[in-house]
Length: 273
Image (cartoon, rainbow, N blue to C red; front, side):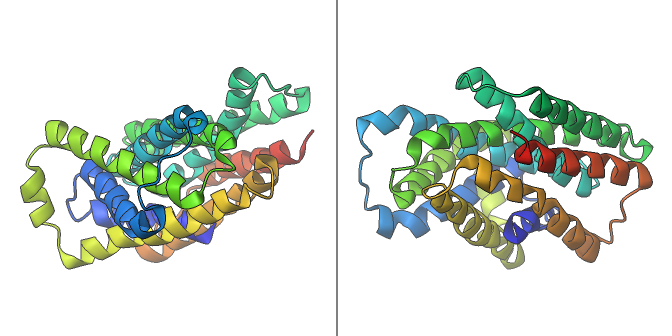
């Protein structure tokens, strides 16, 4: 969770060095792919995994990283983006109810509602009035992260290297193509990336995408999503502390109230039956 929390300020540092957000997401996935090739060895997954693997790769390898970078690009404050990412848990509950027909208790519905109320409070912070687009992208990031967790349930028995290498392959080529047509000047943009920024991108790929995410998906082989997901309430704490250290960002009172409501709701949501 410490690695997950560090992803946001590290990504913001790279974006501040004028790296286009979609291109940066593509390069991150490309590095993941290259590092996992020796372990993947181009093995083809069984047919029964293909649909879930493609949907997972599209959600996690494309949508999550694109909307994460866009949310940071269009926001001057990082802490609200970190709190917004916590919506992945209530979104996950909603996705489970809709897609998997899981029964959701009244108590869980209550905490889902209070989590969204907390986010609304954060959104209405006057200091964030020029950052609503970034917060909107953060909400989409959380939605697709939740979708990825639902799809991952069908991939528990799939080799973890194959799963993440395929995600890297899918994300790299799709995002590179999107960056080419939307952001343009792809070759020049890559050539203009300095060493410091490359190190930041490598950090995101190795520490966050490989170490943090693969550790999480490895745990899914032994524990349920419900047992693992509560720990996501920890990464905002790490992220906000690091944001304060790196950027000197001091949360407002209204932000703190909303953040406490969101994190508390998420904790109780995971503990309730």
